Length: 131
Image (cartoon, rainbow, N blue to C red; front, side, top):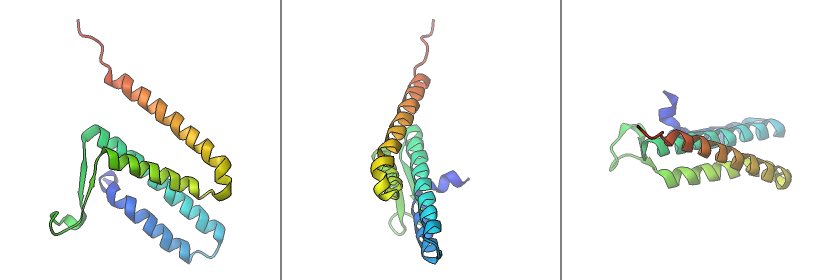
C-alpha cells in the first residue's frame, strides 16, 4: 500500500516536483505544480503524524538495507509534528505577498481543523463507564 511509503514520498515528491518545475515553460504551471507538491507533502505529513500517534514511531528502511549500512528514516511524534508544521508553512509561503492575507486565513482554518480533530479523537478515547 502507498501509505507504507509515506516517509520516502515526503522526500521524493518535492524533488520530482522541483525537477518538473524547471522543465515547465510557463511560470503559472510551475507555481501550480509547486503548490500541489507542497500541499501534498503537508497531507502526507499529517497522515504520518496520525500514524505515529496511533502506533508509535515509524522506522523506514530505504532499499531494504539494515541501519548500519543503509539509510533509515525514523519518525516519532515530535519529528512528525515538525514535519507537518514545516510542510504547512511551505505551502503558505508559496502565496508570496498574498501570504500576509491568505496565510493567516489558512492558519486559522488549519487550527480549526486541528481542534475539531482533537475533540473527535478525545471523544473516541473516552469510554463509557462499565456497570
